Length: 237
Image (cartoon, rainbow, N blue to C red; front, top):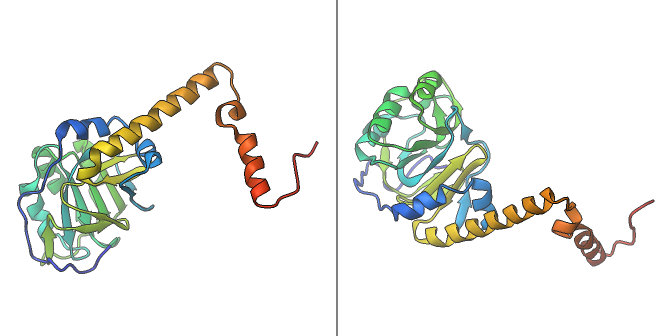
């Protein structure tokens, strides 16, 4: 979350966009499996969550930095969005001035925006709900702030303590938001696929009557960790 930006007042009209098939493949996996897969990902910090019923987002980032509470560059953002893009807003987490509502949300949706992730407040929740546009934000507030700038579009930003670059892939659902560097997308998809396969195996074993220890080896793991810590206690009768 940043209150100033070295590229203030700049607009880069084109953001890099990764392979659409890989983006679609990433969308198959929940954020939990992507996070568990590890690798070159970042998990947006707590406090930014879904504001409307529609929660599923996956697409390349169009990034926007704005002076906290200012909407000048918000008003420009629909011009830069292409179908499937996600607008990611660094508003420094300010909660007493909304930076986006259903009017600009509607223009973003008309241009194919896949969703909004805002480290800022939003408003017009009923209108955003009616649009069906997924919105994850830090909070809601009925009033806006200023419209004098500065701002910047398609520059490196921070969102929930995570660096986001134009073209990074943003995946969001009810559990949270993860960011994948565009160049690492293939690796992250493979990691998530492996996590999903393991979870399918675990669920199949549970369905066959296996217990937690048989599936996870949890008793042996506890004993190993306890021994390493020098613990002398054991299970009590």
